Figure 1 (cartoon, rainbow, N blue to C red):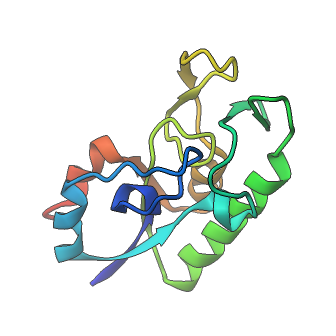
Figure 2 (figure 1 turned 60 degrees about the vertical axis):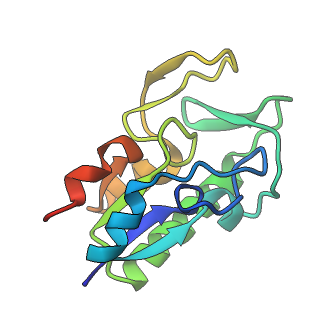
Length: 145
């Protein structure tokens, strides 16, 4: 069975910025075809749960109060990549719109709920290292492979 990196919040782990999770039912079906390797890059980078919401502005990640947390996000991304390599993951399912895990679309940095094109720090690093990334709305593409 192939190992698959997955955002821990999608499995029900309460690691999101607000202390909650965003469980997605089709992840149960993934367990029949993959060994799931749960990650939370924000926690891996040393950020607490709960924490203030953060958004990506260019290469920086800032909290709603203006605190620059870019270093923590980079640390978490590097740890996620280390785990992907350790477990031989070729693919990842990550939480959409997150400044860490977002894939293709993230919040625009204005904390207004507006979206813009782009990737989160972890999604970007994984892709740069040959790991295919998709968000939870596309995880059914992994079923039946």
